[in-house]
Each structure stands twice: as structure tokens, then as C-alpha cells.
Image (cartoon, rainbow, N blue to C red; front, side, top):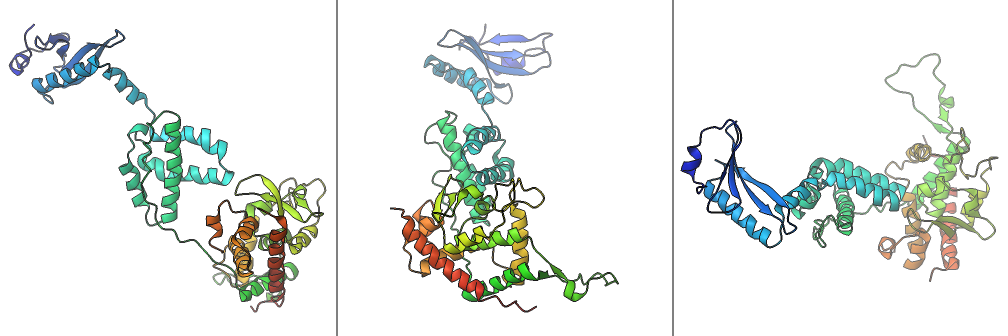
Length: 420
């Protein structure tokens, strides 16, 4: 059994079956020559548990015999210290990719703990932004540089970039919790978020008057619609005075309730009669986004709006669907009605959620303190309330009533129909 050298190896003829050449200098180090002519270095070793292992080191040509021997020597030193390179290699090969891990994270965390809307957003972020770029990487091999590069690529949409970082950071926190990455190895740490500019649109008194007029017109005469200028008129074309569309009254009622309560759209469209307590002047609304509904004081104006809603036999909803009262009105129907109303009122840049901003802004202008505004809008933290300015129903109801009176007066000021 001679020492392996380049001269010795190059002198070997191609064998008819695999040939092993063992090195006389380093026990366990050898070269395998295949009938195809491929020559591969490997090292044999015995683990601390007594198992025999064989680890490939690389091909002759890509490695010199001296380089292969040096690798083999280092491996044997590590084995003597208790390492098992073959087992470690198998573990790495079997380790999940980031995409495979995200499947588990979505099932065991997102779907189990997040609100429905957050679930949709998290899945969209993972599927659209993370998986295409980083999904094929092994979970354990994802580095801070990988995540920082992705975050930088999304810099033109800072809010989206930061949401991606937030969702991914939670995923890597779970990877540590589940023993799939070492403690303190979250690659999202220390990556600086981009500045975000919060939308702060709210309705002025004049805009509120225009909105009131548009709502009134939609409820009484219907909103006018225009002919398509690209389509010629025919004898069946409706006369100008008949070109009006009535919007779903329940959708218009939802818009009004949103304005009087500062609630989120999803909280009102899914409002059930069991959530409304007329006797004590409260409506059950989520204590925080996606949370359990709890009693929340609302203004007299809001309660009057709700009391005016007709009850449909067999339906638990305050705003049921016309075609299927067993289900509540859809968000899409409300959004469609809002698009028509805001266009008529000349408020094309106003979103439904800006009605909530209007309530928060009016509360601050009325002199309400930050704690009352926080409870009025059910913010989780004071940080959210800061943009507008011991929970007690009385001051919150007082604030809500002041706002309700101001909004009612504003809407009434717009009772006159807007000019075409």
C-alpha cells in the first residue's frame, strides 16, 4: 500500500471494475478509480458511536493529492473531537428550504394566531415577494445580507418593504423557537426600516357637506350616470332625467355608520343585532384589530341609524344581503357604493378608511385627550393615536356624542343636492 502521489495515480490504467488505492501515509485516506475513468478521493472514519462512515472529498484533477490528504487529515482531527461530517452533511441535505419552512409557519402560526386579514396579507407577502427570491435557499443558510438585499429591492414601496421584513422576522423567530436555527440568528435583526408616511386625509366641513348631499341624493333620487361617449345614442337610450341609479340602501347605511362610529369597514358589515345594545348605548366592536368584540360606547346619532335599519326575519345581521339574508352585506358592495357617492361629492381622493381618520381628527379638534381618542378608535397602542392627538365609558361616550353632533350637522349642511 504505497503513498498516494500524482505520478502513481496518473500511471493507473482504467480498471474493469472499481479500484481502491489506499494511502500509506494517512490511514483511512484513499482514491477510487471507476471503470469510467473517474477518480475520486474519500476518507473512511469511525464515529464516537462506533459507526463506519465514508466521506467523499472531491475528484482528482479538481483536487491535488496533497490538497485531498490535507482535507482528510482535518476531517479525522474533527472526528477525533466527536464530529460526524457525514451525518452533518445528511442533516444539511434534509434541512428544509425557506419556502418549505414558510409552509409550516403559515399553518402553525399565521393561520392559528393571526386575524383573517393579516393571514391574507402574510400569505401574499410570502408568495409574491419572499418565495420567488429566497424560497429555494436552505432555511439555515439565509443570511442578513440576503434579507437586506430583498428589503432594498423593495425600497420604492417602503410600506410593503417594511411589512415584508416584519412578517419574515416573525417567521425566523419561530424557526429559532422550533430549533431550526440557532438562538439569536434572526437575519432580519438590525435591518433599518424605511420611513413611512401615514395617510392623514380627513373631511373638511365643506367636504362633509358635499358628502351629505351626495348620500341624500343617492337615497332619494338616485345618482346620475353618464352615457358612454363612444357609443351612439339609440331610440332605447334613457332620457337624461331617467339616467339615475339607486344604490343599495344598506350600503349607504353602512357608510353613514362608519362615519358616526370611526369603526373599520369589516367591523360594521359583519355587525349582528346581538352586538347592538340600545338599552345601554353601546355596540360590540373588536377591542383591537381582529380581536374579540367588546362593548363600545357610540353616539346617539349612531344608535338612531342602527335602530332605523329594518330587521329581516331569520337573519342575524344588521346589514344582510338582499339575495341571501343568511349572509351579511359584502365589503365589495359597500366599496362600490362608496365609489359612486364619493365621485358625486367630488371626493375622488377620499377612501372609506379616511372616514375613520375624520373621526379621529374631529375628536382631537374637540379637545379630547389622547387616551379617550385611543379608546374611541380602539387603538392597540398610543403610537397609533398620536397621529390625532383607566378606560371609562362616560368620557368616551361624551367624545363620541360631540363628534356625532358635528358630523350630523355637517351632513345636514349638505342636504342640498350637489350641482351636476
